[in-house]
Image (cartoon, rainbow, N blue to C red; front, side):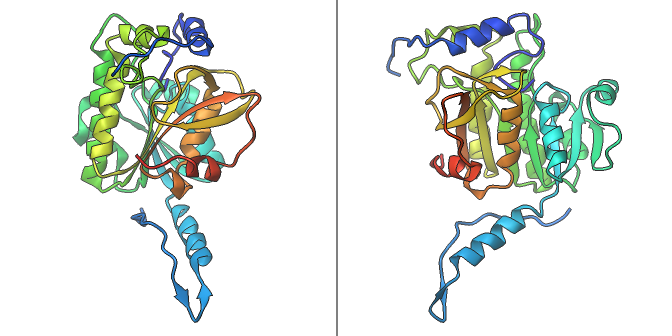
Amino acid sequence: MATLFLRNSPFLHTHRCLLSSPKSYPSFPSSTIRIRIRPLTSSKMGGSEITEEASECKEENVNVKKKIFVAGATGNTGKRVVEQLLSKGFSVKAGVRDLEKAKTSLPNDNPSLQIVQADVTEGSAKLAEAIGDDSDAVICATGFRPGWDLTAPWKVDNFGTVNLVEACRKLGVNRFILISSILVNGAAMGQLFNPAYIFLNVFGLTLVAKLQAEQYIRKSGINYTIVRPGGLRNDPPTGNVIMEPEDTLYEGTISRDQVAEVAVESLVHLESSFKVVEIVSRTDAPKRSYKDLFGSIRQG
């Protein structure tokens, strides 16, 4: 599981209904080549513009990054991330807690896939060993397992994410994609009485834990993209992706396939750098390229 809904939760339908409700709520105040991304600058040589050539070069360089570490690779969203990375020609190192589960939920005949044991709650040193010096980026698709342990969201969604960031810093990995959730900053948005915000925070203040992890990433200096999806659906996509700036969306749903796609696409579009994006899908939304979608969001 990645974010807003609890994996295999019996409350899945409830979550979905809460976020798809059109009702509004009262507001309250509230190994390879490491690439450092710099703003594209335009220069002229002999009177001819070379901006386009430089841009094409940078896009090509992004694709040089070939091995991606996926944390939470056996989750409902994580395994879709793995599948889409492989389909786009990336090599994948899948970080999993349960190696036996990984054998049945992930492809076992793909030479571009390496499965390693990795528990984000065990600290940054062990995670650094799992990520290794051959990974060029990390996608975090982890999520706590529902239960009676109210500290679980903090162990996984907060401290676990921080451990991943610290492991990246130790290794010099400078690209981090986090799958988070809409409404993480619901209190500041005036959504304190939004049923989804209340419900998800019942489980150990899950959204608060996620928000603090986001803030840590943004201060880390690592090139990040934080993807905040709406309510997660297991069924195939039925509409097009709508992408909005942070703290905008408070309802709506999206297929996990599309969430995985946005995470993977963020690796190949410079426009996604240092941004927080919120996503849902709607059948009446126009089809837009990811370059356009990411480009429409201002850096945070």
